[in-house]
Image (tube, rainbow, N blue to C red; front, top):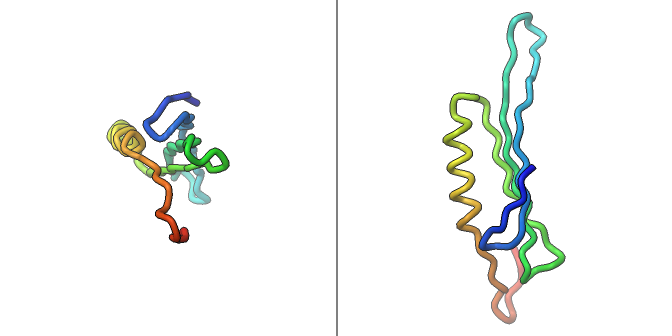
Amino acid sequence: MTEIELPLGPACGVHGALRNLSETPGQELITGHLDYFVCPPPHPRCVVRLSITWASPAVALGIHRLAEALVHSLTAEPLPTGSTSR
């Protein structure tokens, strides 16, 4: 787990890999995951979660870079007066 300060607010990132065994002998699948949990100061009762999962260890570095760029671009703005959330 990593603590990080993002434009959207304080956050923590959790990353790891899971080994999924198949019922077929000799077959297994390793999946990676990366989750960010952000607490945006304008919305103190909210948590924003960004979750990415992939099935190939060969793409892990590229996925991490993509997720970092994405999470650093997140912003939050209040809804205009009279608007409702979707």
